Image 1: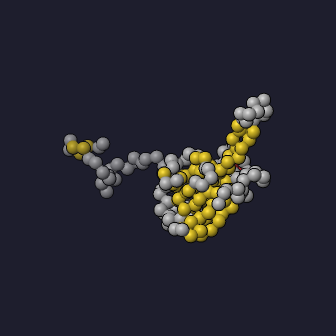
Image 2: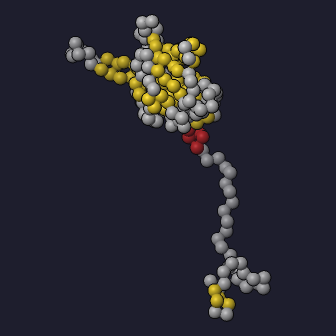
Image 3: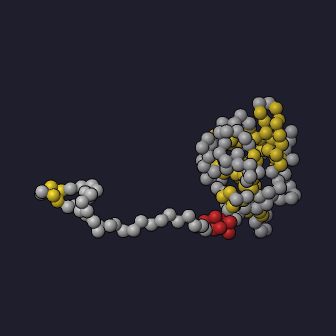
Length: 191
């Protein structure tokens, strides 16, 4: 720093022109051009209706089988069935408040815009009674919380975010602080 009468001087130079010619590097102007990030997301298929999705379908994602069980959510508010949601038409169902992208649109304020996903996944297994046959593929629904603020609850227990949980018949789901309970049943469930 410059010195005057043996003292260091800090701050702006005086008006008398002292310190002239000491310009710093030129300032960069803001770049408001396109970054290409949205195009990259569209190329990977991670954008729907102009909104970036919080999840991508896994490699083992499968469409639900046309034969066999047809899964349904029965939404209860107290003892009353409010609605029935059919879960056998898509490989994934996004749950949340974002109307443009959610397949299961819920308006409760405690839900995140993209709260959770119900994802069908394939799982191969061997029939223990027929060990020489090829493995069979079973397609089952799974639940994953997408890092929601108020959580997703499976049978009363909060699930860990970003982790798939296999769903079974008669499982009960709650999203956030909503009082609605969703019971998973199939068309083959004994009433």
